[in-house]
Image (cartoon, rainbow over all chains, first blue to last red; front, side):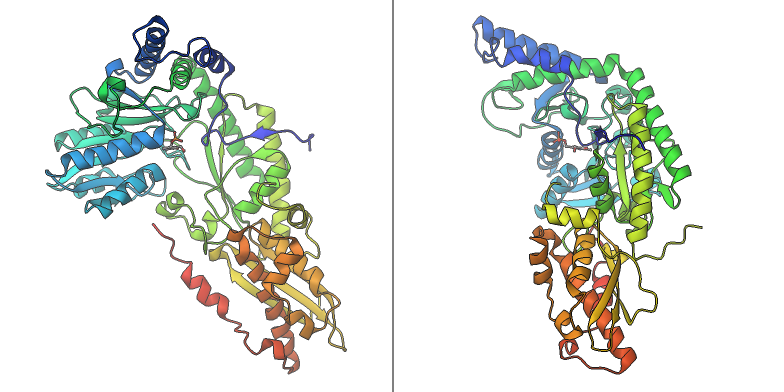
Length: 391
Length: 151
Ligand SMILES: Cc1ncc(COP(=O)(O)O)c(C=O)c1O
């Protein structure tokens, strides 16, 4: 076993801000601090910087810059798209279709609408974590006003057939939103091909700063304002703009576009090596989620007979940071809703861990993580009270 | 390590008395894998009714392992009656505190001590004052309640 090292394997939770990104942001805290709404030069310069960032984000997803509105992140974009659309269209109908595997930013927005009298259908997923288009078609009713389906799942990385869902939504004249927070920079997004009316994006998942994100709103779809106040963001989203954040997000989007192929190749090679070694070298392990339609840097693995939190703590002691949707006692915390929806038994969910790889990850990091896991899982299986037959 | 104090960390990273006792006087299991934690406690009791050895095996999170480890330390050298007086609060105190979401894990060790002594009492036709309220099937009711997770 090699020496202890710090290995971060939670890039789907958040990413470090790239130094080039930080560099572009710094002047906007200090000498270029002007309010973008002001008419004098330093204000106008800040406004130009925002527009430049807007163009970069538009380019990453093949949108028109006028279709990009900055928000505080993925959560706000999801809330706005869903609650804004529901309230706008409630005279037409009160039915919304989503899935059982959405991020809480979507699920809790839907739950809020249920309290207001909306009816929400939560689509199932198959064992790979993917929705069934026939089930979607069957769920559509005359009063369906919105379909919201995430593009890439944050826990097990499954990629949903968004373009097909876009076609179905269009045929039925239903507004279509997709949470593309995990997809951005990891799978190609072309809003025109996908047929989406809105998508949610977040900067901190693509090596940009936290607390900044955007929503794409297709030209021709009028999403009512959600935050009331000044006339910023084309009167769509009030509040003095987070200029350094926007500039940083713009730079991160530019880098994500330029580095896309290299990034996907790098993280998928690391992920594939990791998965191959873990499944071959640690008995009683399972790889959760689609192999074919998957986030390039996501591995979700079940280690049978051991509980997730104890694995995370032992990994942390080795310098390895990663996460699980599992919990010590379901008395206080529920097992992952995503793995539950995939039909994975609760006992196996308790032993499931998400490993996500990023640009700074090296092959040495991956090998160190696998070597550590072998030792940790063997140790925890000595301690476990479940009868382990490792033959 | 985040929400755990040093003593808890020490106990889950380097647990004491892991395993099973050959020819144990009593073995008890409490908890359920469905709920995320399950502990097995085995004890050796001498002719004077003193617990001379205790070993555990636990499936569960860090605090479940730490609570199990310290519980074995706490009962070795005690009589069965004394061991039956140990409450989950005693376990928490001995660990120097547990996060509130992890209190359940200390109940696991209290109940496993009782389950092991119950088994010993059953095998030897003994009765203990401290077992009069003990329900050996309590964890099965619990398993039912956490089988169905919320959507
Ligand atoms: C799929 C998904 N949607 C939404 C969010 C929320 O994004 P943010 O942290 O920018 O609010 C996340 C991040 O955790 C995510 O993974």
